[in-house]
Length: 121
Length: 109
Image (cartoon, rainbow over all chains, first blue to last red; front, side, top):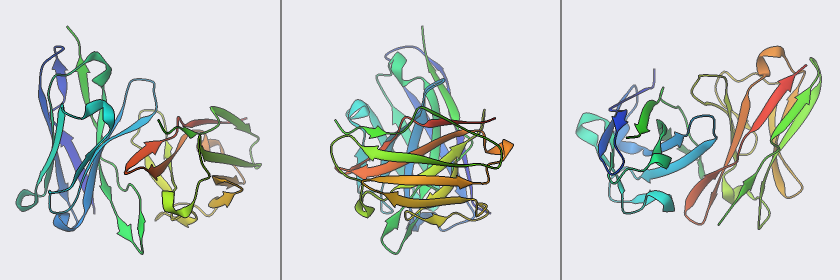
């Protein structure tokens, strides 16, 4: 069974840092693109970042560029999101998501249970 | 800035059929945008419904179907059930990034 388990969320002050982790199991992690998607309280989903299977290709939504860094450790089947200079508007549940690729098609599946990040003084 | 449009709220009667749409503010949706659809119940993680425009994810009932409708992607629920009452999101790939729609809150009543 494919599983994605996030950890590392919590309460942090504005301007602070936090590192999220995602432990993957049940599939060959090193062959998949991976993604972080967030959801502010009561709001919709927002794509945050993608990383390619090698870890060399990284893509971000404009609002987090220069502040967030996505990375992965294929030996540990783990995905990370280093979040610096956090703002109140970064408060959200952060989901770790796998990106399957079949016959030229990409989508998001499955989704982890999410970890809550709260930025507040 | 690219905006993906969805109906904010839609209602359907039990057993009825409803179509939700997913559009782009500045262009037509195409297969090159890789449209896919997700269902999210209260307090739950999103669940994949449809990818590749009309491919159902594993375990998804066949009352859910995807299509292209004019210049938009569409999700149709045929024979709606009470537990289909959820938020539904589409996502599109555009300009080297992924953009989710604002979501549609489906009420079954």
